[in-house]
Length: 92
Image 1: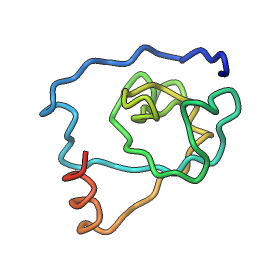
Image 2: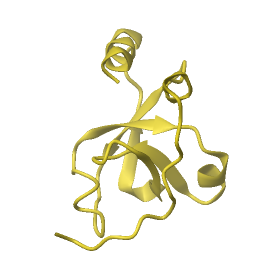
Image 3: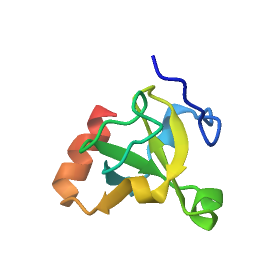
């Protein structure tokens, strides 16, 4: 198993806080140093994070099921049709 350090601790959230009215998604295009936490070419939910925005990082819910900050260069944000976003929000 790989030894990896997260850039930020997960933030505990209640179910209502995790569901963002305009949830966004990103595809992982790089996972060096985080192979156990991020799968290449996988779609991840993105959570708003002002600190991350200021530091070129992105907060995603990773393979652990928790949200962490990762370098924004590891992801490409995607705009999905509203019907797809609604369907994905129901799954989460």
